[in-house]
Image (cartoon, rainbow, N blue to C red; front, top):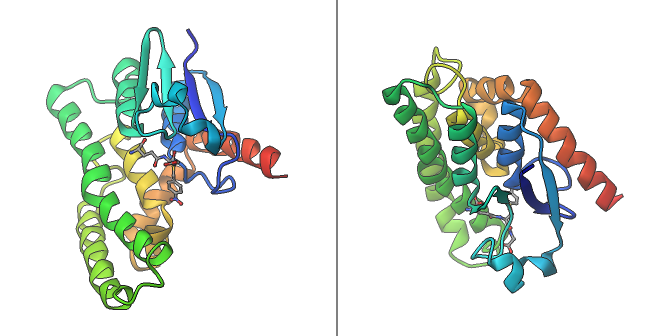
Length: 214
Ligand code: GTB
């Protein structure tokens, strides 16, 4: 069966490739696996029908041959495992998977915390005091990641699913804003963005967004 990916019918990021279906689309493009889309409006997300696919009523989901999967990281891992987007050597494979977890559990939370403080708590009295601390935490993670990437093209040997997850996280606005201070990270993201599969996935989500938003 051709896999089905649920995506926003009209992505609020207006085609910047920031919604989490981007990682799934990119992984599918890397392995040359076609897919169909299930475009959903916000009102569709919290229906029992969609919550049966995604317990939290979010996108993306992935449906294929008797499997319905949620969580972009788990979906990318499944695609990587079934289509060879991870190293064959078991130790190298485990390291690549570790980087997928690092992206979503060590790097992304400090980015999201900074974004939430500005976007959702910007009017709260404590935000002004918290922001320097949140920025310092984010910079600490970016410092360490930049040090790791020094002299490396990809996180661990060849390009892998770990890079897909990490680059998608680094493209989030709060991190993207700091890339000028991190040339090694900026170069890493740029290297990923010129990959044909990234370009394909980006163009596809942008075309859908342009059509929806006009
Ligand atoms: N942990 C889940 C996963 O990775 O799959 C998180 C999924 C998720 O957050 N989905 C969002 C959603 O469905 C869409 S991506 N939200 C609707 C809801 O919760 O009701 C959200 C998103 C938008 C913009 C950026 N950005 O600007 O960087 C990143 C993510």
